[in-house]
Figure 1 (cartoon, rainbow, N blue to C red):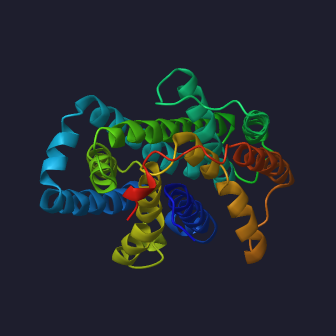
Figure 2: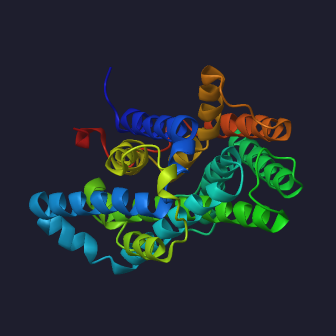
Length: 318
């Protein structure tokens, strides 16, 4: 079977979805026991240093060219910092399954909105299945927000104000990720390779995370840390940094709307893994919201045209 850009991009996207879901199901509680900003600073700091060094050695001219796109570099760093600061805080406040679902759903919704505003290079195709799917995803997000605010979800760390903060942070995180994808597509078109993009996107987040560590914004008691911190960093590189790099690889091969639609399948994968695992049970209202969401995500993916997405000719795929 010939490896086309679209097939390779699909593989990268599915790898991203699986690793993110695996992290949410099997390691989400583990990461909640440590300072998320400390962990993020190490994981993304090492990613930045490693990719910057690799790009400087292997692609020095390309790196210089890529960094001339100052507006994209600045915007991308702001959106990445928003994504992870908001996401790591949201999972401390409300049910992680709801955070992950709202985050995942806002990616295709944010992408669709941005493309309507002509931020992307090509408009989204208004296929019926995709439109209905996006409408159901929006309905699911509103439903999950409502049950969180009304106290019918599985977990809220506080009252309605805390619930509202968690929902808003999750919405901001997912929306920012949609813009990260669109900005990455633009930067790719201007010659920035996945390695360069992946490393340079954390230049703002790392100092913000270090500052948050110093301020103790998400500090946890040392006794709560379940294992040696270097081991947690290593795990974080595999289940946090690696899936992001896989998404970055996909950006160079398929369209933003294709990536956004497949990213929306994340909660469906989480649901399947949790059924297989058998340890975690959703609140009934959360389960109802996820059911609406999963139907919408499947429709959104089925509505993507089979030919949409290839942004490089087949001959360029190694």
